[in-house]
Every structure is written in C-alpha cells, then in structure tokens.
Length: 190
Image (cartoon, rainbow, N blue to C red; front, side, top):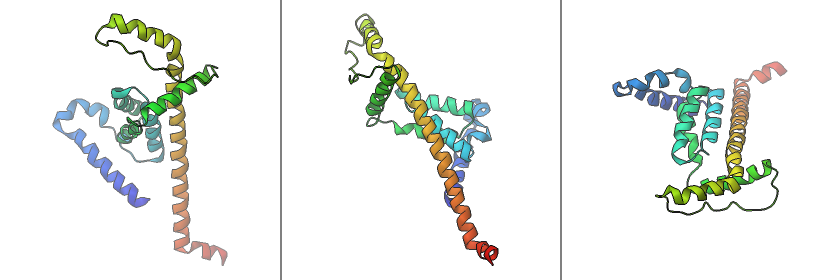
C-alpha cells in the first residue's frame, strides 16, 4: 500500500505543478489549494462519490460537474474527474435504463414498461421537435429526471462507503503485517 500511495502522491504533485504555470494564473485561486490534491482516505472517498454522481450527468457536463463539486466539497480533484469515466458509450444506456426503472419505482409505477425512445424529429426546427420532446417528457421523462439523480446519489454513497471500508481494511492489514514482522506478538505472549 505504501508504494502505491507514494506513487500516487508523486503523480498528484506533478499534476499540481501545472497550476503554477504562468498561463494558468486565472485558475490559481481555485485550484491552488492543497486539499484538492491530497491522497487521504476522506478526500479519496469524497472524490469517488463526486465522480460517481457526476458521471451520470449528460455527456459534456460530467467533468465540469465533477470539477465544480470537487471544489465545493474540497475532495481530490484529479480523482473526481477520472472517476466520471465509468460512463462511456457502452455503459451509458444501461445506466440510464437502470435510472429510468429506479425513477419508476420511486414514483410508484410498478408495471414493467420499458424506457421509450425519445421522439425523432428535425432537430434544426424547434417548432417540430419542441412539442414532441415536451410531450415525451410529460409522459415518460419524470421517471428519468427523478431516477438519474437518485441513481447518482446511490452510486456516490456506495462508492464512498466502499472506499472507506477498503481503505480501513488495508490499513488494518498493514498494521497486522507490521506487528507480525516486528515480532511484538511474541513478546506479548512470553
């Protein structure tokens, strides 16, 4: 664990160094905070939670949302940005289907309907697709609009708890090995 931790800390210091560049002066008040680059249990768990939540945001807003949430909650910024990458073209639709089903469950809609397709229209003419999209959202969008943030919060909570538990287990294992290797357990028994 300590080798991995040293390697990650070295990388974080390298990434933190780019904020010191002259062209990045306008970002320094926001990004030149040590807590955004720490590799500590709570900072890492918070970054995973932020990244898991922001990963469900619509396409180009994921990294922006993760960055803003990492700044607000003062978690590890690079890790929060990296963690949003669990959503990709292969996982996005299944995750949104799960979010849709979760939204239906939260709304008390228990029938087995599948998520409908967004109406196809001529996207250059708002008078054509605007009313179609509005009707689709009125009929089917509510479960999705409720399910996406609910699933994001659920994934964030699971990610946070998992990191906290695994980190604690790794530290306990490391202490056990250190105690075993130092021979202190033999001294206490004798």
